[in-house]
Length: 462
Image 1 (cartoon, rainbow, N blue to C red):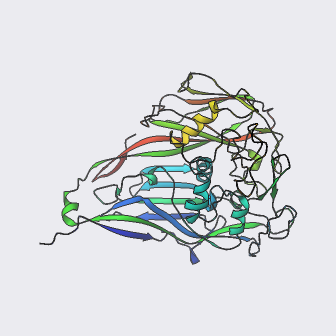
Image 2: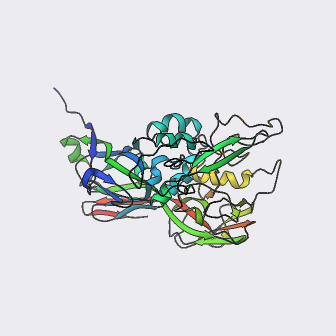
Image 3: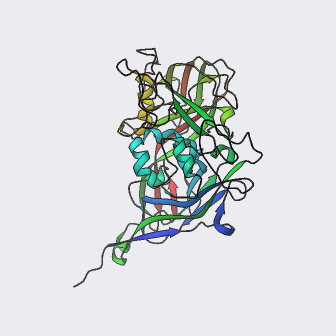
């Protein structure tokens, strides 16, 4: 006797619910993309979820990009790129995931900044050049490789790296589950997505110099980007009638959500206090950038820049030291009950006392894949390091010397979370800032969430 298969695997393809004429989205004409995942019987495998689209950049006059990067070339339509650390996902400013009955599951503001903060610390050079470049050709360890790809429309199939959509357990979308869900994506401004090409040269002493090249100051035309042929795809496991009828109509789902906040860092001794309201905080990660470099086509708005003084809209300023970092819970040092110090050792290199907790806040102690080098904190082998290596490797062999300056700490190694719902989270930074350069201070909190689903709908429990 033949027995029907318990689950049938199917590929689902969904077009946007608010598809504009020509299916073309841009930050100026149609910046919001919405997908509705219906409540049909089936378990959605969000590990396979991909956002698919064609990414193309043009001048505001409609002319194609003709990037021919050179340290001595600033021709028309030449000298523009997106952040090669995160590729075309640089365009996604915000994402919201909610249920069909309006319950919010996860909202990430500054999604592109979050991806720029975590990606270099979760992906190594091999991942950038091989595995992930197959999903997004604009991903690269070199800005020149990214800008060359932008000369033509680029086909992209990228995961949405949020907490809920990274759940390893298939999610029941049916009436016996979360009753479907809605995904809203908001595109960022042109000037914050598109930036300069970084041309790297190697000096005789082994150090590397970076020239930021952009055409925005030499021609009257600006640049803009657009997304076309947008659709969502994922796998779903559809149960047969017998299995579906035996499935419970209520239950719980546990997942890690990402929450974001922004502040301003200005003083040489400053404590930033944040009311997170999170009951199960797992980790906190921070990144910084001069405020004048945001929404500025002449600068890379996704750069993880070190603290500096006298930075302007067209210059990086002079780097200064971060001397100590302290983390607090309700005014008490926690989870590190000591002052994290960056006292100079060796050749004035950043110290693991501050770097390692920040790395752990992203990887949760799984540190096999990342670009961060504790010897330099700005990439791999890009300046003189140990005494036995007086020259760096060839610039053709290593990533661009982009800064990888992040701060943070993991609050609970068991990944169950610590209750901050009634106590403030705070970070105190002592540095050599002079109060003249305001820094945008981005904070990303990872927390364990629990939702309960019943035939009546979905409730967020924690």
